[in-house]
Amino acid sequence: MFTIRRILALLFDLYTLAILLQVLGSWLLVAQVRLPLWVHGILQFIDQITAPLLRPIRRILPAMAGLDLSPIVALLLLQVLEWLVMSLLRI
Figure 1: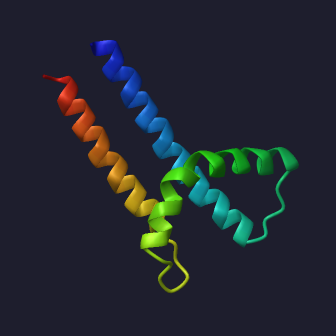
Figure 2: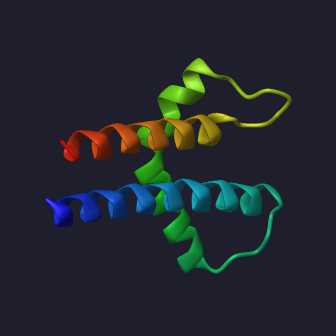
């Protein structure tokens, strides 16, 4: 049981990191920072991973004053989901 909890915690941490990297990457793209092509490939992959969670949130919560708040909501939801899953595994 301990190993399953550690693997799940790692997966939640990796997804959280992917969301944070997606935010950072979007800032770099908006700022028109010149990036190597391989970085664009990584950013595209991260966008594909995070889009299934962020896209529905963006439909419900539109950008406010040009700011996309969906990553903040997604990170909060991810934390709640992780807490629920981990508390169920402690039973």
